[in-house]
Image (cartoon, rainbow, N blue to C red; front, top):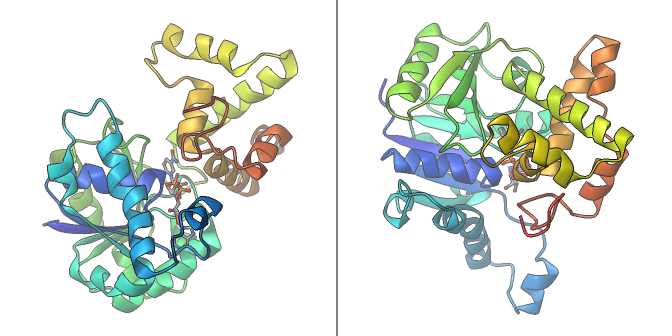
Length: 307
Ligand code: NAD
């Protein structure tokens, strides 16, 4: 299987970094996102207008420039980021017809992802693999209604954050995925992307996130019950436990609190055991933070300021 050119849809926390990781492996990558409907107050104050130039700059800011800033990253610099071409989904959808692999990394919402794959299929060509970076939504449900041929090319490829350092890649085929594509993706991810691949079943949150989100929620609930602060929890769950940087709350800030809420809500809806459902209940404090725009690293403030 030859993957020379890829497309990533969604230039957020994961999409931009996945595009970076691909470029770093020498793969030309198109990075697409949606056109923002409105300018932010900051942009208005700067006198910007909502024209194509602004849109493209904004995508570039989310994508390429973020990548240049990430430190330390000796394996990652402007030269490799130049392999990334940014664009907007509405105008540049046709570009998906020119790539060998399309990776979806947009907001964690089943209906929105389904709508996107419907559009993607219109420009998709047989032979191009398509995958989702979802944290735990059903891979099968995402492409319900798409043709059997499209579904045979479709699977979950779940990267972990940050993709350039985290070795694990979960591959989640459905009963409709052609085994040749699953094996091809595994070989490519291991040999070209440097990943350790685990095949997971299409169950809520797959393997790593079913356990990981469970652990984060238990820790969160304990903190609230015992009146601990994020600093105290992180001092125990970080270096002390052999995790160099990302302890519990730093991890949540990195992931994005909005994404974490979506992921927890999704798994709670889809697990059957009532005790497990209870664990995945999102604490009110977390929802309030999201409402206030305290989303973690992506908004500059989460549990920690200046993340
Ligand atoms: P994010 O919020 O940082 O980015 C989401 C992007 O989706 C944004 O750039 C947004 O403009 C775009 N988007 C929103 N609505 C859209 C629409 N209707 N059509 C097209 N694009 C749209 O989110 P993220 O953290 O990068 O997560 C992306 C995916 O990756 C999710 O499925 C998430 O569950 C998964 N994931 C996230 C992490 C993590 O640590 N954040 C880790 C692994 C997997």
